[in-house]
Length: 149
Image 1 (tube, one colour):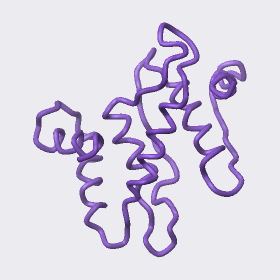
Image 2 (image 1 turned 120 degrees about the horizontal axis):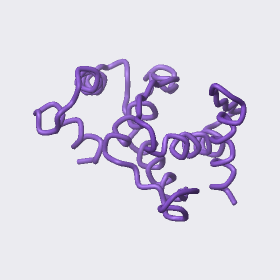
Image 3 (image 1 turned 180 degrees about the vertical axis):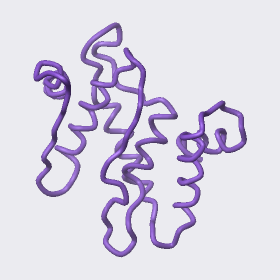
């Protein structure tokens, strides 16, 4: 069983405390797995997780160490990248809203995700970051660039 599936099962069984929204995401995950309109591309999710381990942390005490996604992060990205519309092969989800507290490597993970779309996805990828100020938005760009050096 995959880490993201174990996480979803633990939420479903109440082994991991979770808010209403996370429980709804888990319900949707299992519903989508059983929906004939969608297929789950495990290989893409596994490639993404392997790719994340190739990306180093670029600042802080973990600088230079590979990114090791937590189970909740793997679950979030499995939902975002794994579900494909069976008829078209395109991803079911094209956006996500993930709320994370301060000092939890948001910029680092966003930079890693941007690099994934830039390098691993087919076709032209336009990647944007938005923030209150230009300097703040540039943090993700700088982190993504630093990961590649």
